Length: 283
Ligand SMILES: CC(=O)CC(=O)SCCNC(=O)CCNC(=O)[C@H](O)C(C)(C)COP(=O)(O)OP(=O)(O)OC[C@H]1O[C@@H](n2cnc3c(N)ncnc32)[C@H](O)[C@@H]1OP(=O)(O)O
Ligand SMILES: NC(=O)C1=CN([C@@H]2O[C@H](COP(=O)(O)OP(=O)(O)OC[C@H]3O[C@@H](n4cnc5c(N)ncnc54)[C@H](OP(=O)(O)O)[C@@H]3O)[C@@H](O)[C@H]2O)C=CC1
Image (cartoon, rainbow, N blue to C red; front, side, top):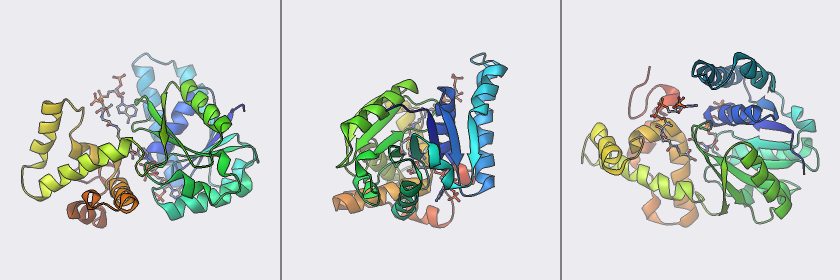
């Protein structure tokens, strides 16, 4: 299985990062979203990151130009007609993902791999809406994609060994470290990380300490690079809430109930850094 051409669906913070690392490793990339403004924002993030690499002497202007030239913008999912792999990084919502997979299954070449960057949704359930469940797999990058080394690779019930191997090899080509994980709610990363973040939100909700002090405890006391409330803002509070709901529903255990304060912030449109306000306010 040779992978050369990739379609990334969703040009948000994850999709743009995935497009950047794929293009940076020599893959031809089609970056797809539903609105031009999201593509513009994604491309502008990629350009900003590459310019920083040039400023820091890690890349030349020519290398930056070559990487950018490997990325084509797309507003039409039919552009997946000749790709080798699709990496879906749209909003964390099962209806949205299943509708994308249904559509892409009818368009992408029969031997193409359909991967999802979902942070918590069952791969098997996404695969079930396609005619090729053996070619559907989870490829879970971490945020910020250009920096973080891990990719969790999640096998659905039907994922073939050949597809797993191809995705594992691609991950290594991207300069990342693959870790194999079974298809359980939240996989490994978010099953452990998200309850900690949710507990930090409860700690704020119950008035135990201020947001700054909660973050300081985890930064200075546990050497985390970011406090949990800052990290929640960075991930996106909508994504955190979706993940907690998946854990709650998937395990049927009340210990995963999302904090009411998290629900309230999402309902208010306070989605974190990407919307300008979450636990903190951003310029
Ligand atoms: C929700 C899920 O499903 C799974 C997830 O992804 S959970 C989230 C996982 N991610 C984390 O936990 C991130 C925790 N935070 C960190 O590791 C760090 O704070 C951080 C890497 C984001 C920033 O690091 P920092 O030292 O505080 O800031 P800064 O000095 O600006 O950046 C460090 C480096 O990262 C780079 N960087 C920071 N943000 C970046 C971004 N968004 N895109 C690309 N590069 C970035 C900077 O260029 C810098 O690189 P150099 O040192 O080589 O110049
Ligand atoms: N944030 C994080 O730290 C991490 C997130 N993930 C996962 O990555 C995925 C994306 O998250 P993230 O990048 O943070 O989210 P964002 O909200 O930044 O980006 C999602 C993008 O997908 C677009 N989109 C929605 N529906 C479609 C569609 N039908 N076709 C094409 N594009 C669509 C959205 O447009 P619009 O704004 O109009 O809805 C938006 O531009 C989620 O599954 C998330 O769980 C994985 C690892 C870490």
